[in-house]
Image (cartoon, rainbow, N blue to C red; front, side, top):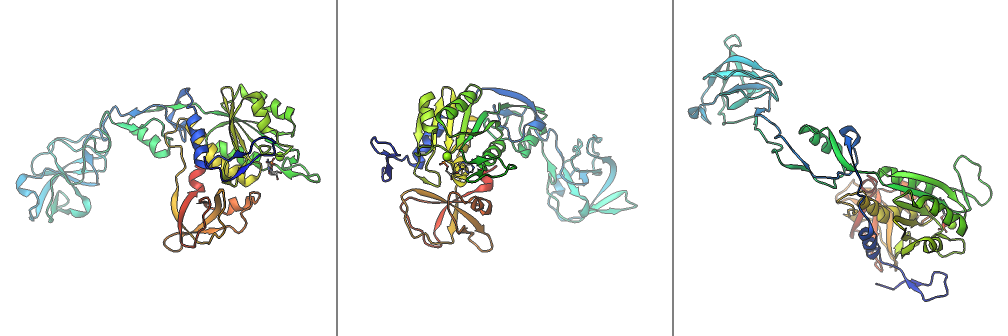
Length: 422
Ligand code: AMP
Ligand code: MG
């Protein structure tokens, strides 16, 4: 453990080192238990759900050779392949998609449409644009060399019967649902949604819609957190604002713990005299992690109350969202059964200098400028953890390593918000 930044957290015992981001993430993801309950649901309801089993195809797709074009299907003879003669074929059939044509006689062609089965005796499809209709449209003539099998989509071209088409742990997207449908599946087994209880500490919190009294602020974390959880497809139980007392904090935790897989709170997790999250978790359960070497978001707690996991996010609105995205999101995704639960970093060039090395790794709000190559990241001028507008302005977060200065043009890790919010 790197204990460069140490503080005693307002206590009178031995100073505690802050956990590194990597250690914190390791503790969180290794403790995340994948939910073991699954359900079989209609395809239409599976969007964004996590697949609970590998899905195999019971048929090949396509299940028959078919035409890739609107055109004419022919039987190309050995001696005609790739030769440059003008060939003529007599049209004696018409095969729309969904119908079966007759066996193609030698020297003949059939009008065929995209997706229609290739008839017996045929081996090549010609694009209609390349065929000239002659002799009162009773024949086609082609002048270019023709290769065998042109414009035919062979059986199993997309999927072979028995293939795993979708792996367990995949978060289902529209194209995944379509692929399941393409092999005739109408229901999928997915993991149950996890239940997350939330509440918000702070005597200063007022509800949007009410009139602010002196010293009050509106509770914005309630809206970011519920929306973030909805985006992740969690079931949310929301207790709202909770007073800054030890008893009120314990009561809220008790009320949620038996019903929830996870409880998430904001605020009250630091070292002030009005912060009761840490002591309440220690009283009712177990604290496994407290405070991380990150900016914004140092005050962060992780623990459990029996089978129910607990995450305490910081109160500052930017810190709450950033730590949710960096720590709570991978934890929740793993609980939901996702195989890919870690955030992906993209390389981006900094369009700013960072002069002062800081002891904590910093995640700054940036917006990308795509006008030139390579894409450059511009810094929002105010990076305070209370400046919620920075999150609204930003495209993502740039990671500035501990004790590091940055020169304009340096390449750094960038975490796109649209990726982390998907
Ligand atoms: P705390 O961690 O409780 O000391 O809160 C840190 C800062 O975040 C304080 O300025 C709080 O007023 C603010 N804060 C706490 N909870 C919320 C909330 N739910 N919505 C907006 N700001 C909050
Ligand atoms: Mg507070």
